[in-house]
Length: 164
Image (cartoon, rainbow, N blue to C red; front, top):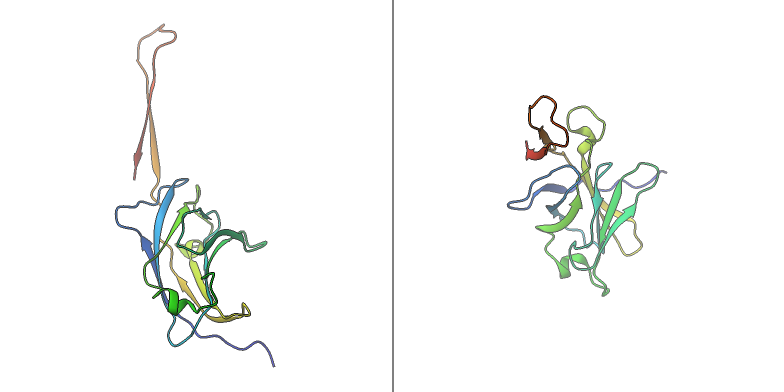
């Protein structure tokens, strides 16, 4: 006998209203997880490689745990009291602050940008898991302007940035 299979969960993510996923910047993400009939003790969110969970995620959140050699980071959300998550939250619109990767993770299309969620019981054993596809990163374009005067030394230059 091997490990017991755990059910797949309904899981989705998106940017919070007005947020943008600019490489290297912090953005607020909204995660929705339907735990079905499970009574989880904790929810873990697993980010793509290069994404880092910041302080300021939901109450009772431990941001930026290391998943190991995979290079992914984890945020664990669990109430401090000995209650199930369903008694604490509805697990809809869990908002987490994440520093967006500077470079898109490797993988065909958005495979490298996949996010994962899993719910755990009191013994930290998985009760269910889910995967949500990533989304494209918005590149940040830079433009350098300088005067076109022959022989000019020490002229001013302007550097501008614009989102994609």
